[in-house]
Image 1: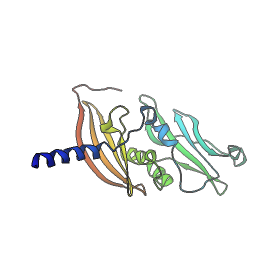
Image 2 (image 1 turned 120 degrees about the horizontal axis):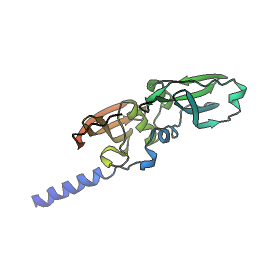
Image 3 (image 1 turned 45 degrees about the vertical axis):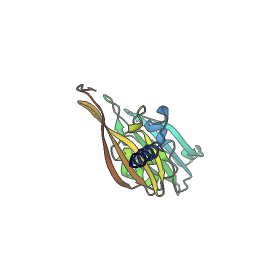
Length: 196
């Protein structure tokens, strides 16, 4: 009888863990996540720009693009989620409010712009702001579970020397606050160093 109860407990534990859904590999990149932002405030127009070196390019927008000319839009350089070794790249958000352009340059401003968490992609963006990444090909670093007050996410931290990946479960509440971080241990450890 005790063996049966223990076995049932293990099965239920395994089932609970399998409730996590994963984002498809082609949907885990930063651009795909940013395109799912649903601001909790109505803006006349807003857009996400990607800047590689000094050339900004609009990758997504919502609203009437003609407003850019009407209100003398000026592109900006620099921004959040900087990377792209060995060159430099980043993202910005521009939004029109009360006939005035506003720009989001850093992660803290991005979190305020996202505000209430409406979907798993926004929750993953909050995790990314806190230096967690998504593993496109391993569920130990790519999973989400809708909770009563937000999302539980399976994410990872990547170290390039020696190359390793550590799995974490993080809880993001509906207001975009990181509430809990729990390490699940390393699921990749090598002796190699990845040099950029």
